[in-house]
Length: 114
Ligand code: 5GP
Ligand code: ZN
Image 1: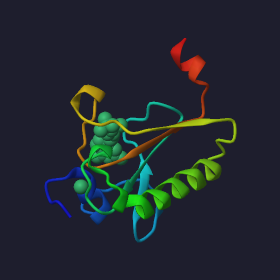
Image 2 (image 1 turned 180 degrees about the vertical axis):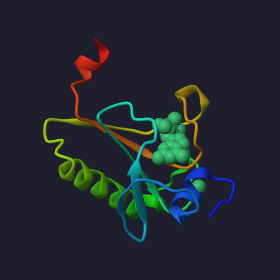
Image 3 (image 1 turned 45 degrees about the vertical axis):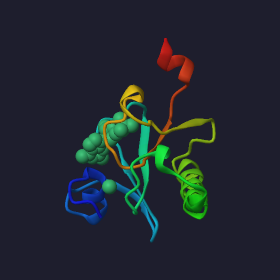
Image 4 (image 1 turned 30 degrees about the vertical axis):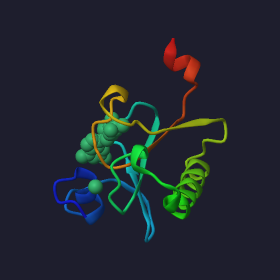
């Protein structure tokens, strides 16, 4: 755990969050500033800065994270479609330096762009 990391502190329960799912490797919670009707963040409990730090050794963890992402999308009723996004670095708008996958759903992308 990185005490200076917002998401490490959320995972530890030091900062409250609206939890959606938790297991020994992953934590999922609702985004505080949703950009879609369903906006959930899925993170590894282990501190990893971003997708830019991943190696092949993280394969099992990524498998778990994506299985959790798919299960949450089903649970949230997003069978019509959804997006999964991970921003890396300042040019992409990453604001929290702890790897996270955004699940965005509940509205058509074409309607959002309109
Ligand atoms: P990024 O911009 O790094 O890809 O995404 C960070 C996300 O974390 C943003 O969508 C932002 O709304 C969310 N966020 C920032 N601080 C908090 C917080 O304290 N609680 C929750 N639930 N989400 C947060
Ligand atoms: Zn962290």
